Image 1: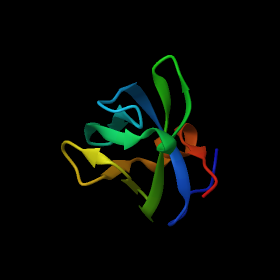
Image 2 (image 1 turned 90 degrees about the vertical axis):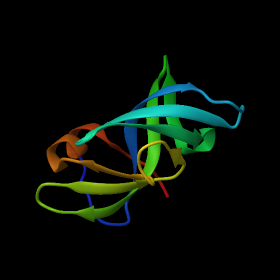
Image 3 (image 1 turned 45 degrees about the horizontal axis):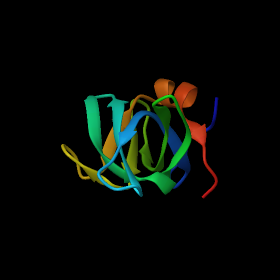
Image 4 (image 1 turned 180 degrees about the horizontal axis):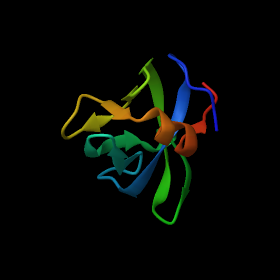
Length: 98
């Protein structure tokens, strides 16, 4: 479990699929409000194995009931903002060096 704070760079678990270009991948992320999907740079992914991995995100805000993060990339239903519960985030994200 990690301590979450604004500005921290974390890895969010995601499903990973090939993108249209070799420098990108399509990801699907389960959030507090449902699935978010879109394209990210492969360099923003870590620990990719068997279609699973972590996508780099930066924490924008932490409150008692929500962790808001910004994901770099091009997403279909969001501008790159995603929300998670603090309990889920503390148990499922990984620390990523900035």
